[in-house]
Length: 251
Image 1 (tube, rainbow, N blue to C red):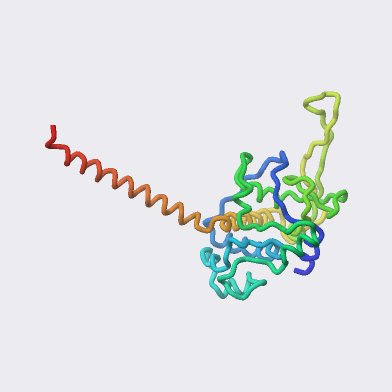
Image 2 (image 1 turned 180 degrees about the vertical axis):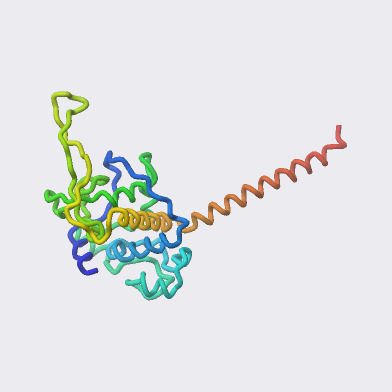
C-alpha cells in the first residue's frame, strides 16, 4: 500500500482520455456476476481508492453486490468507519492540487463519462487498463496505447508485469516514399503475479465494478422498465375493449 501511494505521488492525476486511435477491446459484461463485482470492488479499494475518491457511491451500496456490512468493513474500508459514508479519501483536494498540480479526479461516473462514438466507457476503461507498457522517455517510465503520454504510472504493474511496445517500419499509406513506425504488439519483459488471462479477467472485474458504481440501480431500472412496458401492454388491451363497449350503441 505504501509503495502504491509513493508511486501515485509522482503524477498529477488519473485522467481518462479518448485521444488515441488505438482500437478498443470489447469489455466483458459482468455486471450481473456478483463474484466478479466483489473482486472488482476489492481491486478498486486497494489500487484506486488511495488517491481517487468515489463520492457519489456509499459503502453500504456494496450490499447490492452481495457483501455484508461486516465484509465491507473488514476488507474494503480504510478511510472511514461507517458503512453509510461515501467513498472518500484522506487526501485533501487543495493539498493534492498544491502537491501534484491537480487533484486526482473522482471516479464515481468514469464509466459513463468515457462513453463516446468510439464505444462504451467500459470498453475504453478495459482497454486502458490493459495497454500500459514501459517507456523510459516518460517521466514515470510508463506509457499507454489507449492514452498516449499518460501522466499516471502503471499502478497494477506488479499484477501484469512489465512489457514493452514493439514497432516495425512500414510504408506510409499516404506517401509511398515515407516510412512510419507501426505498432505490432507487446513483448513481456518481466512477469507479474498474474498471467495474461488472469490479468485480463481481473481488469474485466474492475471495469464491471466501475460500470456498476456509475449506476448502481441500473439493473433495477431495466427490470422496472420491463414491468412498466408490460403494464402498458395490458392496459392498452383493457382500454381498447372499454372504448369498444362505450361506443357500441352509438351510430
